[in-house]
Amino acid sequence: MPFKYKIFEKDAYLLVEAGGEANTLEDMAEYSDAVFDAAFAKGYTCVLHDQRTLVANFTQIDVINLADQYIDMDAQTYGMRAAIVCSEQNLEIIRFLETAFQNRSMELRTFTDIASAEEWLACKERKFFAQTDP
Image 1 (cartoon, rainbow, N blue to C red):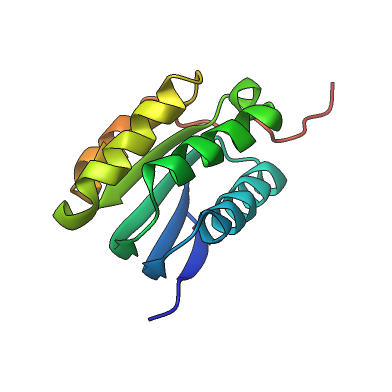
Image 2 (image 1 turned 45 degrees about the vertical axis):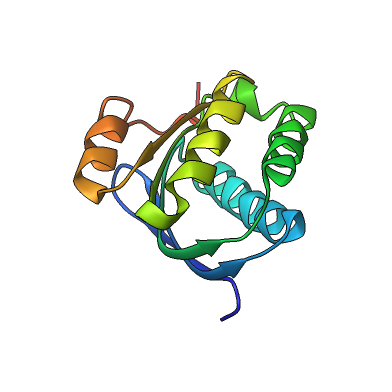
């Protein structure tokens, strides 16, 4: 099944529903770039990734390379907070991703249920990028 995702605006966060098979670094980089661009354009700093139907076939090397790409973009300076809700099947690789991103000063946590992820995101419900008039 091909890798697909949809992005939705919620009151306090951007919701991204992802499913299918993510097989390569390119799959994840394209997905991550689209989510980052949407969050930035719409003024969100909190993102909930619902990946419970995703089959993560990427490797730990792919995860390290993806995290390094975010560092190259200075992504850690934007104050983003991301929660990933994944299946038990993907828990090991997504927890590795969590560690890789946290080691690069990015706020990312892994969950297996939506309610816990929403609760964690709630402590930072704000729109950081939204432009305001002085």
